[in-house]
Image (tube, rainbow, N blue to C red; front, top):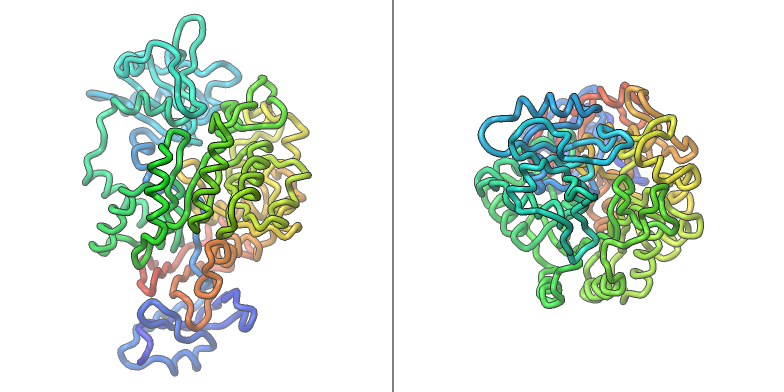
Length: 521
């Protein structure tokens, strides 16, 4: 049987130690059948094989975003505020959104409020307005929005969430999802068709940026139903791993039901992972730290009862689930490691984010078989003078331990990279830039902690081979070799060798998922 499709004339970066480079690769029915020079790969083809002339392109294993939220389409409704740096710019953008009903926005930076408290009354206009901050852990609601939701003061939540109040009542600041949902719950929801269309559009946008796979970090059983529907309709264009999100308020009975779903899968998606949050974010004071931040916050876990978190980790680990824990602060990282160490043996577990880590925890990940899933591009909100909210809260000592990618890698930790979109762009070229240079592609900020920079090869492996190893697929993904999946990304030049500006501008010329060309320039 001959190949369905073959790429010829390229520079193929295989990441296969047996054959590091080639010029051609061919596949059949979603599986690679030949890798080598043009002549040897042509031998696997016949007249029916589709030939792709990729002269000038650099082809790598397909890129995988190891931490992303493509199903959070409710959080990206309304105005895109990611380019607004002042409150005046925010209000000007919102003015263009006003009509009948709610005004929504997302991607808000903490810096637009400066050092002052976040107050919904500073949002212009009379319409009920709800804006989500860039990290998704905080929102600000206008007085009209609070009234529409019936919010009149502080309320108790099962998780460490808060409706912020002062002597005048609710300020409009909503910390963590339970508090945000208290207002979002009265916003008219997307229809099922609108939600599905938005998900499909995001998946196609990922393809256009070279993404062949992703770990969609907060799923639930209905998400599995949506994936079946998309795959049946041939609209699933990204290979997905979808963890089941466990919350402090999730009943134990529900967890017992979910462990039965470990084997749920389709051709391009699967479950088998459980997701936890043990803290929030530094900017709002909800990250869990060993010592309080500069404003006296950061001493509380997201799960009010950390022992229950550890018990949930043990339950899912015992049933063969990989566990992924959001842990931003140093104490959160230590708590996640402790829970994993106490749990019954299971797959390799992982910690997400690790924005500041104590020296005594740096060596534990590799020693205890825990992977680090990190997003260096989240440094984009830092200021060179340390005047941003993230830096001010942490202070210089903890800031110096920020995003310790090199320290972890040099200790033997398996390191994977992602975006956490919609927190930051899903463009892997931007992610690689921050991982390699710790600076913005335009040089506007950084470099930060230059000693933590990765090499070009290490950054590429963080999106490819390391991700395959993390999820137990080292024998069929993450490199280009006969018998492996036909997931490939084609660049206009070698991303490992480009500087920041050139890396951002290098075109994505080809994306192949399961042997199907899903993007081509």
